[in-house]
Length: 271
Image (cartoon, rainbow, N blue to C red; front, side, top):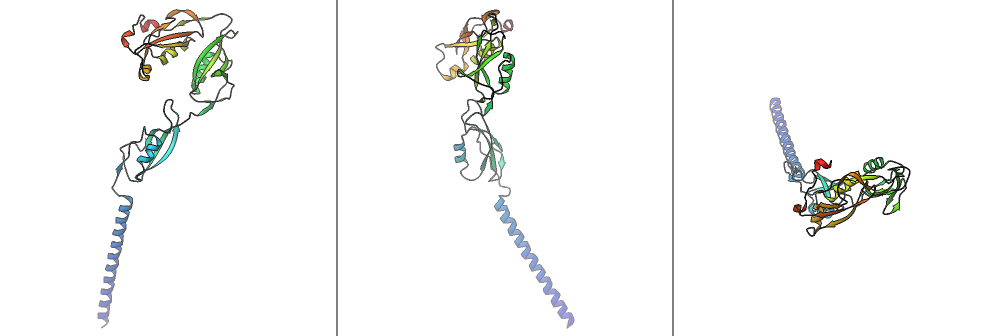
C-alpha cells in the first residue's frame, strides 16, 4: 500500500509540474507576441523627405503619428525664408521603426545679433578682416581728408553712425568713412569684364573703389537674368596705373548675352 501511494503521489506531482511548465510556456509565448506587436518587431518604415519644407508642411506630413519631430537647431541663412527645414536626422528614406523621433534644423526667421567690434582708428585692411570675422559685410567706402591714410574714421549703417558695442544683425552691410591722407591718393582700376556684380564689387574693394550705377541691357528682364548678368563694359575702364581717387565709384554695364562680352585684356595680364 505504501508503494502504491508513493507511486500515485509521484505521478500527480509530475503531472502538476508538466501542467505548470505548459502554462508558463503559454504565458511566455503570449507575452512575446504582445511585445512583438507593441514594438513592431521587424517592421520598419521609411523616413519621409522633409528638407526644403516649411514647418507647417512638416506638421501636416507627420500628422499620421508615424513619426514625431523635435527642432534641434535654428540657423540663419541669407536669402532663405524662415521656418524651412535645412537638415533632418535620420535622413530621408532611412528604414526606422514607427514612432521614431526626427530631429530638424530650421532656417531662422531673423539673423542673430552681434555686438559691433571697435573699428575706428584701425587700418582699412584690419577693419575689413575683423568685419568679415564677425559675419558682417563691408558696404560703401567714403574717403575724407585726414592725416591717417586708410584709417577708419567712422562706421555707418544706413547713414547712421554706429558705436562700438551696438547690437547689429549678423550679415548686415556697414559703410565706412576712411581717411584719405593729406594727398589725393590714386588707385588703379581692376579688370572687370566677364564678372558678375558680386565678384566685380569684391575686385573694386581690393583697390578701395565702390560700385556706382548698375546699367542692365535689354537682355536682362527677370530676376534670373539679373543673377547671371555679367559686366561687358564699365566706366572708368581698366588701368594698371593709378588714375582714380580712392573711394571713387565705377559704373557697371551688364548683360545676360555672352556674345556681348568681349575681352580686350587677358585675365593673366590683369592680375
